[in-house]
Image (spheres, helix red, strand yellow):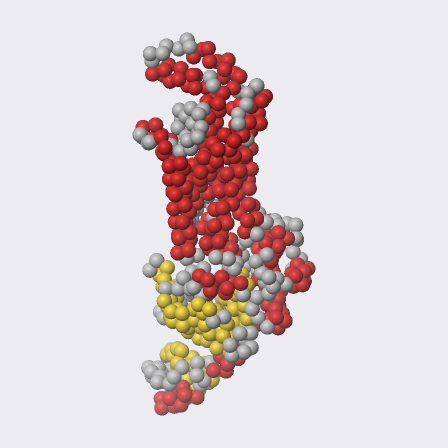
Length: 254
Length: 299
């Protein structure tokens, strides 16, 4: 029944996220012919200017369908959508319920606080996983409609890597939700962190093995060399934040 | 009612950010009793319940429910599995329907009383398909009471059961509590500052003031023990310096002294005789009198 409660509290965020992500994934595939139609224009741009150089590089990247999907869907759109909905799914919980009084009803149940949090975290992470992987499956599904194909196996691999990456933002918001009693501060702080990371990211010299998706990832990003170190760091970070959340809630008086 | 204690606290203290909510609370709630926990706003009633249910950790002292330490995380789960609780806020999950929240709660209690559930759904006229957020305070209070009563638990802990309810719903709630105790042999521990309702259903009471129990005992026994003695003198009344045990308050006002004693009137009269009063009146006191006198702040 705790699963049911978690589902009821997050279902709209999850369903809206799944719908938005699926639509964006499908549109990324469906606009590919138009992008290809624009590619000859890139050749007319002055290659000496910095902007022109970047446009020509991007054009070269999207010329290959697989590279186009990785750069436009996994490295850009899905990363942003998964981070955003990870933050939204991680918000709420016992403390914000406490402000409305319903937390006392929850806490009067014969269930430990650890179990309450574990259920909510597992349900939220599962929803984020379904959102990330489910929406990505639009790619192999719609690719034949533009005369292309994209492997389901590669889709699963890439989307699961992004799920792990986005889990950090879920866990961060989940942790912050055990610190602040309102729903807004955890959301705003986590969003601020996500935006801050995306701004400073291009200026950081992070070793390739620690990057889950670089904005300039090529189509062969995960051809046998998953960024294990990057994924492990993110799993460890998520685990630490979730553990911190449990400690916070167990210590707290209601 | 038996000699077994369902709830026992000893020198229980609870501090919140430097504020002393409980300051050495001693409480003994016998099994099978309807125990009224009286106190002013902020006296520590809700904090006591939260500590007993593991929602807040005690700062010092002991709190035991069914003989289990309330501050222990594992024992606390066991305590909650044997306790039905209704909070003062009467807040539930607004997104669930009445039917759904009943099924949700029932899933946690193997001894859930389906027969009681059906009886109270009818008696309280609960709309099963309506969402909780659409219920009035009175209906929500009755739903919360149903959710506590049907757990099949040995203890009901209710924080301000009738707060905000109209007299008709209040009566329904109180009657449901009495029926539950007589039918199931459970213990009811409820807090209130509605003295009339405590007098109506409680067989034992404790008055808590500033985090300490200042009066505790069986209601009949308290009514028997507490006496107001009014002494009138010929001239100015002497300073009311009594040595007798159980003096709650002694107040001089011109030619008279009014004494509230928790140990009967005999010792007070005996001592006052030396001052040669011209008249002595002994008046029985109500629970309201006891409450007002024991929680009254000194000016």
